[in-house]
Image (cartoon, rainbow, N blue to C red; front, side, top):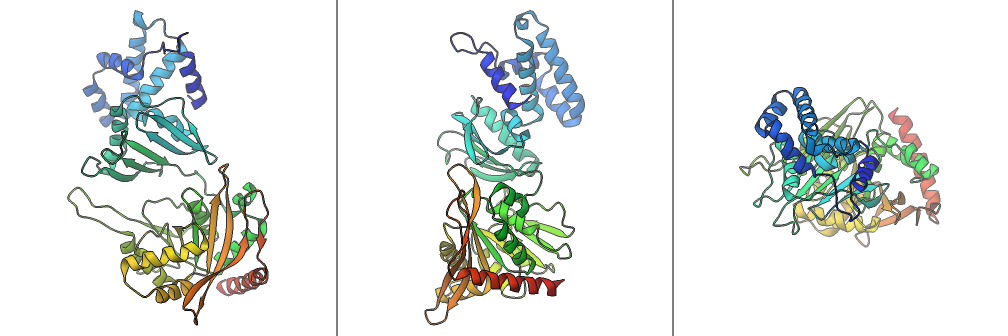
Length: 431
């Protein structure tokens, strides 16, 4: 049943006073459990899911045959049955949003509300959880197969659904108004630079410039705020890598997707287990990736001391590496990287900035407009001034808003042209 049909069913099932005339899924489940006990249901789901679904449907039909359920309309019966099946075999109220390809994010704010994101805009769902126990059951269904747990002593956890969607859970006491669940979905197909061009996120000349830069093994950092489309652009840039190169990805939670590239291996960080051991950090993985004969190292996001290892990799023969980091502007990315490097080692700022300028060829900054549309706003090159001992950002391209056309900066258009020529020659040599 589609989200629209569920919404209409919810509205249809209300009396003149606005009170629902359709029994809740919890009440219906209690009736079904009179016919098929909860213990029997759990055992069947574990042993034979196909048979379990058939027996649950049979129990539903038996309940609907009783006289007190005769006044429930056929459409509402379907709604109740589907909601119960979603609870038992799927992910409850959010199952419909998980199957809706246009929905990119789902947010459960305890029992206060359920929200979802579509085309970069937030919407309140017509349904929400009325009992925290249902939210906790959903969390257990997500974490159970992964061997993860969340409780008062460990109230925060990141996990991943079978479809690859990222899940973040925050529980009381850190979550003040009940359990919070956020699901980040990813498209079934990878968005390329051409796709972004069709959406207006990237100008044609800029797309070609970025394509040549990746082909010429320029090391690139994609920067931007939360939800600005950093991972989407990183994945699009990754699609430009030659199929004859070996790619090693390093991520905190696997988000990057490669459906066409023949040689990609992925590494994913791991948190401590219940005994407090088994921690594998991004920094550990970056160091290990250097021993895996990579042509390209792609770090999903630099957040801490792994930035030092990433810069060292770029400066020691691993050109063409790609990464993302949170920053408000290309200039801000320098201070952010400097701070992250100092998490790992206490080096002078000018030494770190020199390493940054040497390692990174380009910074590509992305933004999200007020209407939810994402676009590349800046492309910048880095230079290190020996006299001032400072790293400076030289903007090559700027686009102030989604509705405006991007322009190459005064004096930088020629630099951009020189870099494109350099990209062409390097690409020819690599082939």
